[in-house]
Length: 281
Image (cartoon, rainbow, N blue to C red; front, side, top):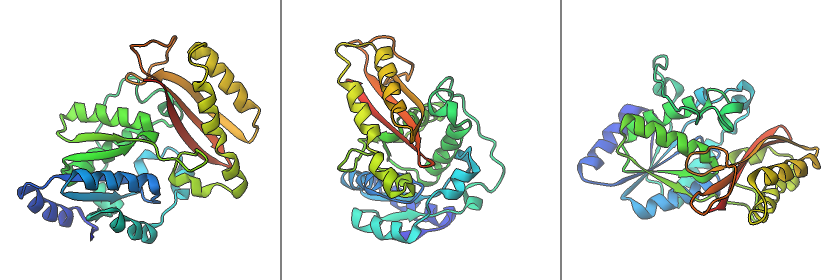
């Protein structure tokens, strides 16, 4: 596995591979890697000639300075995990390399960056779109792999790709969960032992809501799940919404011709956790 710390070195290496007709699979990350990330690497390994992973904690997607400061940075451990999973090239740029000048790019996401995550994290998705675009330009991947835990992020990245006519094939990959159902996240390591024991309540309530789909409206399920979170005072619920899985707009009714997904964000032990679950295909 080859490590690159500057864009110039990375692009010199990858340009030769692209000229040879190699298919590049790309997994962008912010480090603090876990099995969810490694599953993306392994998927990319199966579908491409060369697998590239980036590790970059992107400052412009954090609307909370404290969250940026606390984000776990575990580079040595990350590198030890990547090669056995099938990574060929890892790109570890500096902030100066990624942003040598003030950021001027902007995108129009309509309502996508104003609902759910966008409502509570203003500017977050603009930062995500900017860094993904720049990484795509540097890596020039054939395929890019993103985990479905960040469901709204995928919708925003797709929108950005459409706006710039990106040739990259975006590959969404299933959520990887702990045995107790908690969605794997780099933030999980910040939970206290007690909070970690409590965290699977999120998955349990998502499942409870799904069992109600046949006989209840989305509004009734939302009301029920919100009331259940209120029984757990250690959880601070930001939102629980049931939306159309394509448009991400709230659903008034379930329909056979519209796929529904439930999305949730909560604070637990001063750690923000998100999750989602398909409620109808």
